[in-house]
Length: 94
Image (cartoon, rainbow, N blue to C red; front, side, top):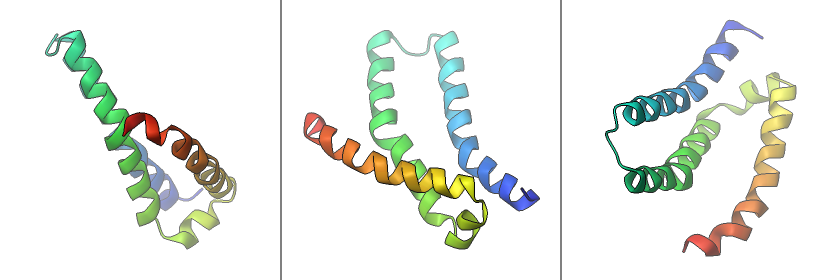
């Protein structure tokens, strides 16, 4: 893996890590009660995280993804397998 590939992967993962860290710190400081935390968690898991992952995958040039070999296969399989899964649960959240 080259330096650019590592930076690309870190750029995709870093927002998720920072979000989890902010949530942990706000939980320790008791900024939110349990009801609010559940609502925020639902918003993040249903909307923010999937949109962030999708935007990172779309913005990554195809030739870079394909040059990563196993990572490209994992991404393609995740996209193919997650689409029917998300369609099967979509009516639950409408």
